[in-house]
Length: 162
Picture (cartoon, rainbow, N blue to C red):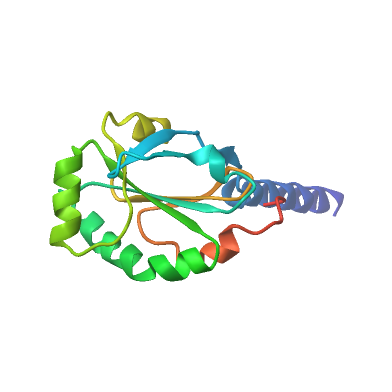
């Protein structure tokens, strides 16, 4: 009987540890960056620290999935800003004229940052496009996905125990 209890306790401990490793979120500071937008204005990520959460959206004009997500983001943009979320679409590796023409052709009103040399994409270890990163007020990455995070409010909770 004692051996069975010991086995049960060991199995329970293993299950708890595997749950913790599988579902616990390890917070990572978002790499800071400085990029120019289509108006040649400079945007620095760390300027938003302690002010508001930030949604980064990495994309390219040649990516059909990016086009779909850009339309979603464009439709939600004003509502997100009103809720206090800063939205920073980042084009990866393309010249300003191409991005500007694309935005006009698709009637998108989003401001876009240009990562011409892919340095920011590399800092975020991008594996593909499109990719979203949600960064909380303290500058920690709390979500990464290839589609819009519909429950983003739940992801930027003030509780850092996750």
